[in-house]
Image 1: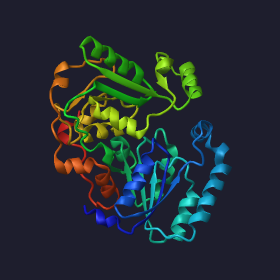
Image 2: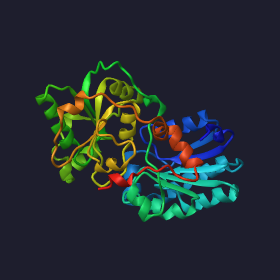
Image 3: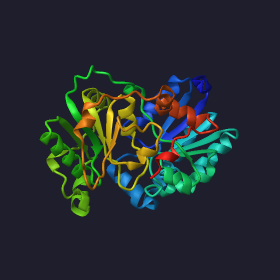
Length: 345
């Protein structure tokens, strides 16, 4: 797909904030020639706001309405070709209707990197959109959406370091579910096999972490001293990838969709160990590059660490990139075939 399709396209873009990916997407669209107005989908990103929106959104409806009315004032004189929404956690129906009223020819585009089990508001607004995508293969069938996995951003293009690795195994992730238990078992295995490992666990706040520590059994084993309440900067993550040979990916037990870490690892030419067995259905699955583990019975293999990474096919590699992702979402009438029938369980 020729990226010039984005030239002079005017895009109104809404997304929740997620480790700066929203800005990476907006900047990439601009670099491809589009004019982009980006707005945070949430009125605020405080821990309290996020909690109220998820648990009792009705208590926050006045603030949500005031926020979106302010946005309408800012954009009422502008005209857009596309309305691009990621997730749809809080955006109200009346706002979408007003956007269409102001821009009768606009194309409405929806994407979600979360399951609808965690985001019921997304289900309610699907009827508005012309093009609808999800990263979750199960949700795509249940809600009749196109299936499109995530991507890796340009910074991850083949991070070659001449194989002078500081770490054999790298894990970076938000603290949730059984991640800590799995990662710590992998760390112990690495020590026993004289391999170097680095793990970074992140929690958005001490209050949130202590709350889950008290009321969520999966958090009981988390070591407080190993938790960081400050996320790594994008540059820090890139540097850790450069210094690592294999990346560990631990998906949430309730999600089938592949995480961003999967694409960032493969995009940067790093081998991958993952708990997501669904990865065997994807066209880039290769036993040499990807090792699947049972989250309930961690069994690693030294031979996997010794074999070099085998490059992904060029066409497929482009499809996995952020440019390929955007091209498919905005322009491709027939989606790329992302799931291989032969690899189904």
